[in-house]
Image (cartoon, rainbow, N blue to C red; front, side, top):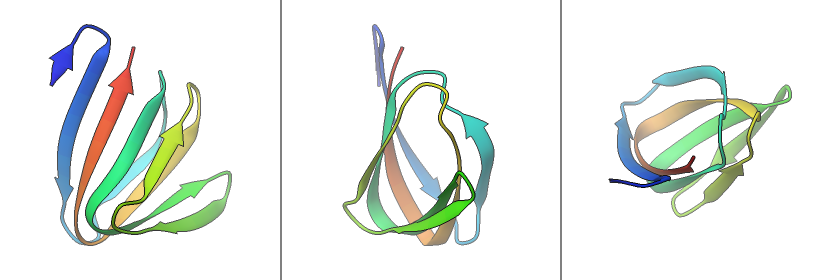
Length: 78
């Protein structure tokens, strides 16, 4: 969905898929709909499970790795 400054994207990741470290250009949330993943920020690793939500502010750096097939919803505002 794209509407003005809002963008909502459903993403499905296969087991073991990694999204390399990148910086958020604008505020965003990541909501885990199915599966689990790990994310790393500032050298620390955290586990995310079904229904967890993360917020990333502009400039925040992070990377994620799917643990099993994982579905997530990204909400981004510009």
